[in-house]
Image 1 (tube, rainbow, N blue to C red):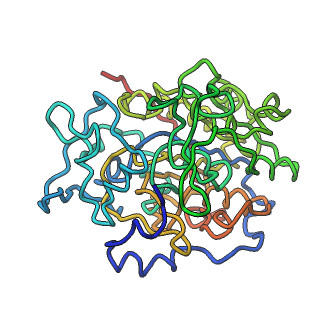
Image 2: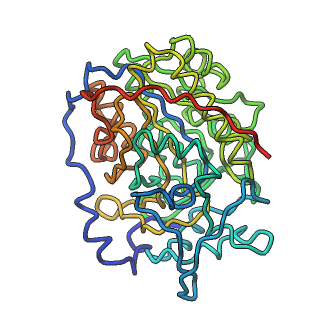
Length: 418
């Protein structure tokens, strides 16, 4: 199914009218943050939560506590339980259905939405359910206008987080009607993913590509990096995006730069993190339904505590904590159309910028997407962009003030989960 503008027919005119103003002008390398105090950027990309499902009740944010159902009735969002019975479908076609041309009123019709006779797609957490995530948001900078780059599932959005492109894929890697246990070059030979062609049709291709990534730009400019991710025999390996990049999976970077996620806390506490880090988590602590959000939050707290426990490293670090897609959960803000109507963004996802340089207790309304993270890295270290999307996306500098009195570390205690 195409992501072209045709799917946006019926979108509110006001939404379409302001889209052009949300994109940054084509960039030339910025030196605003280059060679400055930011020596470490850490990208933590968790799973499957919309903004309203986690921060819809957050004071001052553009959140919602009610929704409109397919019959046009306005109802209160249900209270979401810590763990669900099953995942809620968030495939591309299902996302298009939920968004409903910008009306945002058909989430309850998604596969898996109804659980224990309750509409869990139209539900949200309270502050007491995710207290530590809220503490980060209250202390640092919360972005309430951050959209997943692709209207759909994890695979293409994770590719955008490393390359600002997704090879025009729309789906998860599949073996027939079954999801593949591995998603990239290590997938079974009969694994395919749906790819859009230039004439706006689709074909099935093996999920192993060879496009340039941010890692290639970092290598070319002698900027250190690591990709911390579960190993091949562990849950969560499917989100190891560099497995889908042939020249990295079968090249020297795989041995020298792609390391086990368990190494991250050791490197962080020891002050040996590279300049750029991606951190991918095991499935059980990913926040991906039906897993416990308490367990996922605790894992996140432990990783961030490790970073903050080293004062000299914390003093020069920016952590970007976000979630890869909406996961089938309600959000009230219609996704904008991309430049020239050529790309549809997915629903909003939470993003928290955690740093000594984060504007204190700040809510950032700037329009961002996953390519904004890459642009931020590029601008910070004066690197060239990869393609048009990172080059025209806003970077994250509005959430930061490198000249302020630094925000001290916020060491939190993991909770006791039920």
